[in-house]
Image 1 (tube, helix red, strand yellow):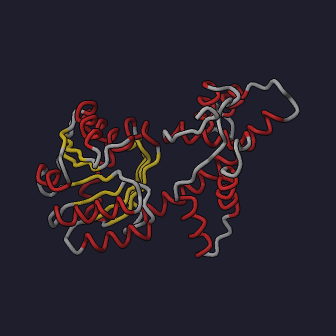
Image 2 (cartoon, one colour; image 1 turned 60 degrees about the vertical axis):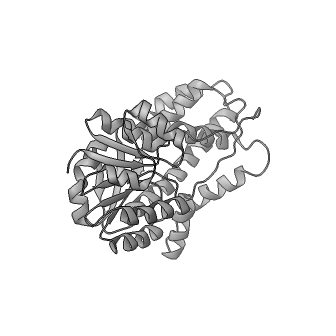
Image 3 (cartoon, helix red, strand yellow; image 1 turned 120 degrees about the horizontal axis):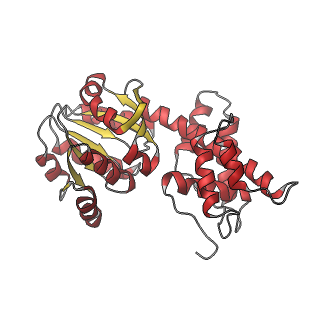
Length: 306
């Protein structure tokens, strides 16, 4: 594979992927429906900008590889349709968003009719991971994967990527990953609520998170990010505990029901997010989840002052 890539979607993830790869010597051509995002990526990531999907395809030499970092649903459909028209047989599209694996399988069939391979690449690590190294879960045509594997190696941490099977398999593994993430975050939030409002009033929550992040059996990136959040705001003052869900937890629970799998912890963590959006402030556990989503994904946090 030559060191050249098209990137569609230059938000928090796509722009950092572009910046990462340009830093590794890739030629990157970027496009976004937001012209300002293209300009920012050209300035910050030092990539080339394209006016539309067609001009991006024209700027790349066959066989092309195009990375999509766009929101799931209709934006992916529209982008995939445009790429089906703009690309040629032998090209590869990588859907690096959090798409529903069932829709991914349908899109793979539509692109295959045009001779274009679709690889689904569920990415974990957030914007910082896009710059420093992601965990990537991949599905799709094995030959296309073999051709672009060096790209995944360049974008991931050591040992942090794998091809899991046919179209949809990567997004399926990422969906379950996010369901597990929901449950882990819920447990962390509830634990820190018990610390904040329990028997001992003066426990330093940042210190707890530090100790739990060094050698304990619950040590994880989530506990390290929790420590960072408490370093910024020791008691999460002014934070509203409204915790959105972006789809993957719902899909995980739906799929568990379809397959008769009693995913009780994941289901309860999903419903806890629904409950957090009823009322004004939410619980302390909800506030922990809200700030954690900001720490790893840059998601907005609602505050009492708006």
